[in-house]
Length: 324
Image 1 (spheres, rainbow, N blue to C red):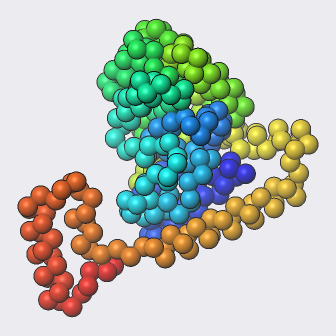
Image 2 (image 1 turned 180 degrees about the vertical axis):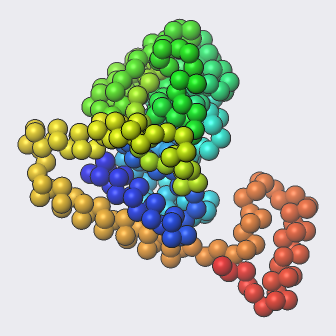
């Protein structure tokens, strides 16, 4: 259900963005199995640290869909983590979430918890210093952490072959003294098994693991991207033949777990849930032009306060309350 929900939500959010109802959006198509297979291996007491494309993991972790819609519409409350959920907000700056995850995992160990932290990042992030420093610290102090690299072949427009001369990203773990494993990221069950083993290893006190999930971004990097400018149609077509969703569906059908009628019913169910979430989220979207001054600094600077008052006076003089 969550797999299908993620796909249908992805499709609907793309339409909302093209209609001007939300801002920039990062599609997930192609990554679903790698993300959902891995997050299934966590307990509710474990920590999840995403970057900017792992929002399907939030669905599995019981986030309201409304939050995601609000976030992509530009409302900061969309990334307010629900009570009782051990997740960090989506992270936009590349690789900056990886040291945060090491800190979370290290702090949990100091507190005597048996929780494990799972951090996501991409092949592009693996080249950043933040990522290397985090892995080195995690290896030295044997923190209970799973590094999960979604190698989707492209760091926006930079291909994997220009990212590193190493044969795999997984082998980089050797230098930091912990295991690295490469998996088929389009196989949900492979993602689950590899992550479960890494989580169990971390929980035993045996330190971190690096998982490289080889997958492909079948859609846009974001809605501000045109991938036809840097990758060929033949390449995309070859990866579409390995797409994870029909692959997992066929597996469930072969096992007698899912029928065509089940699939149709699930589609109707998740579509209704998405429509209801959009209605609830849009009912909460009461923005003002003055909001551009909020959520910039914890304490507004004198310059921001002066600019806000100047705009407030202009809006009052023009008879405009500031609503969009």
